[in-house]
Amino acid sequence: MSVGQYAFYCGVTTGFALSLISLLSYVPILGTIAWLLRLLALVFLTMYFVRRYRDQFNGGTLTSGEGFLLTFLMFLYIGIIAALYSGAQIALMAAKDSQELFLLLQQTYEDAGIDIPDQTIRDVIKIVPYVVGIFYILGHLVVGAIFGAIYSSSFRRDAPYPPEGQTMN
Image 1 (cartoon, rainbow, N blue to C red):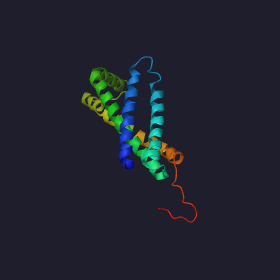
Image 2: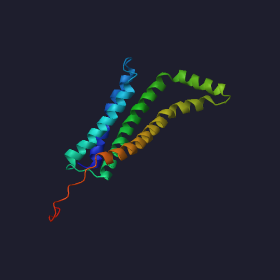
Image 3: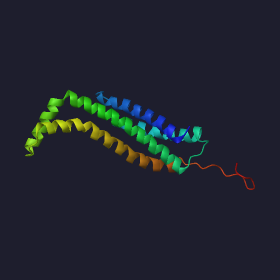
Image 4: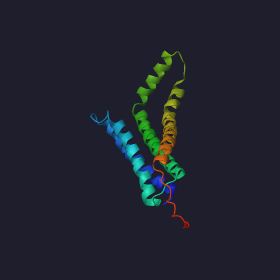
């Protein structure tokens, strides 16, 4: 299995797992610790998938480049799933509370002394899910680069050298 295929599988799996964990924030008792559960799941799942790739799919070896690429691609796919999830969630909330949100923004602009047409406020409300999605992806790419640097050095394992006098096959 190639690094890209494995990263896609693991990234999408982790992204959906994190989305399901995010639903716990709606449970009153678990809402306060849902972010911690999400963070722990992110760290442990990505660590597990990198080690699994090294040990089961790559013959027990993992170069720094492979480790970084695998982790970065995983976080790209996690970011895409997170962007879709949060964008859909925000779009549903905006549709549900559209009038209240509109009135709040209108009042905020009036309090600031800014005269903005109503259609502009409605256009801003419509674009918010897309902007949030873009920032989710960018944020996951930054975190993926950081985790990629850490994982590539932590889980690196070079191929064993042959004994003296023997050639490598």
